[in-house]
Length: 334
Image (cartoon, rainbow, N blue to C red):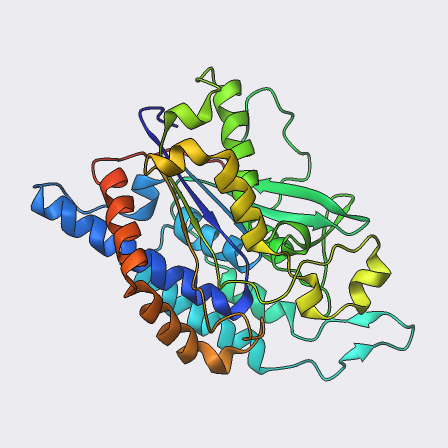
């Protein structure tokens, strides 16, 4: 990772609303490359700019598409549309409780697996996604595309497909995922906004690789993108049985609360135009995680948000922070 001005990207979870993340990122990247063209510079992809991308749930899927699979944002939007339609249109015949009282997945994880598998893809920037330990949902697990010097490499190195399934394994929607001795659930259960995990991960990498541990002083641009301002408060659940019986809205972490707390702790980079949070204020949070038929509404509300004066100004400032930045790193996903 280059330490000459660090750029990071954090992506919230949100099911179908993840399309909003992509529309926002498309706007930023288009503005960035327009500014670079005017300055006589070549266009860049997102993995040329960001040294680290972290995501949770569908934000994790997008992180993998952008940073691990090296997809352009437009290609990612097309793939994401195809993915959500494929996995959310065909419900399993058995929905609810099985014969032994076990909760069964509402949608087919096999559909998700088929959409993710993409052999022979190129490597991009460093990427990690968040999942939860089923036995302790407060324990967030970071599944990385790279090794951190000084930390032991897992004997159960997951594939990119396993990682994608693990971060998006929402109870009652998809099957849980076994990696080694750990049963993984959707990271959105306690880290739907992974911004703190991106910061902590970056600090770990800096310290282990001999960089300046004062992350805030070295940051050039820290970009966090949400999937709609929350309409409900977070409910943290202590055990798997309560978690399974809860409604989907109760399982969603209040991402904006995390964003406010992070902005306070990062107030210096925020005031200096080096930390940015984009999140559609109205019209998205009443869309269910699997409401793919409302994807048109997601696009409309996001484009409307991007036309607001505050959002336009934030895009310009974000582009200004990134326009001369190029940062390529070589990860180590299996």
